Image 1 (spheres, helix red, strand yellow):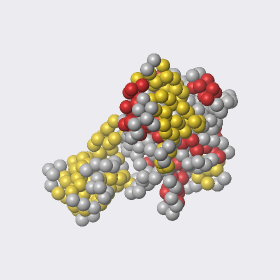
Image 2: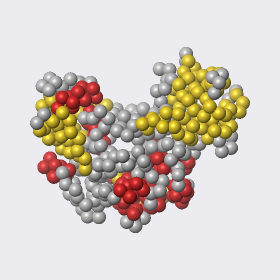
Image 3: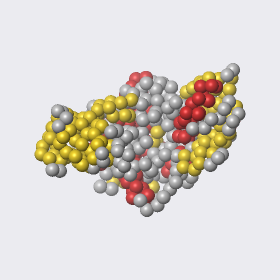
Length: 424
């Protein structure tokens, strides 16, 4: 949790902190003149420090109130969550508190898999996700060490364009965040099945590797039938195991032209992630994801004036009357990563895919794989997929599992020329 001046929660069992005895029950932590003040249920001060760590005794857990999930996405909400491990509070220079949970890697994975997808999903899918998420985390920690020594700018702004992408650049006080920016991590709240613990235990230490290196194994909810290249969403470089592939038992042509993009996006090809089986989706998706019913192909419509207002609000620029929206560069899945917005007052290029999704929605578009139609004062966006589309397609992978594919077969479908290795 970030950006709060007060945190409310509960210690479920006994915790110990430096300079204080055994603590339990309701608590609050608030920012006060350069310090974090820890208070008990009666609002009595327990500790005052720029940083506080509380360590559980035995099987004690802690709960936090009003945790935001899906930050700025269409499923954003708050909920109470319960966690294992240490609880830490750190103070930023602006006086806000960062709440950090320190936990073992394997316990973290059990929570991630239960938070990303339904804990009752097929076992082959859960095992594949365990190896996928373990690889992503270890690659992220390795990259975090490298970026302490190197700088990789992720924003380029000129008079004519805004190119921005979002990776791990903001995480200075902790390794990974708990939301969709990294991996969903919602504590033990969503662990409702022993299957996830079994999948994690049976794949312990197993990771995806390419030429001996642990893979930075990305994934999204639904690719829309074609996965995307790494460079469409992030840095301008190729990653061999994150190249676009057809998410189907048969080959689908990769997108090369605007005509091909329109034909693909307005069609309903047979692919693994093209499923409307409600019973299956109920089994593989968390409750809040099940409210997103149209994800393989979707349509969003705006009054022209409404979209002009959204653009002003989200971009910070006044384009005036919106005249056109022109895709300039697409990736092989049809996702746009350079888009020109043309208005009566201003014309500007925006990228990459996530920034495009932010500019054209009050939250986020499902993806940047869309085609635009102007008609009778309205702007219609017809789109494909949910998320950046790079790497494993979670819905497609879950469907593959229901069709009898093993965890290793699923991973080798989405990540080409990889090996599965046990490193501990």
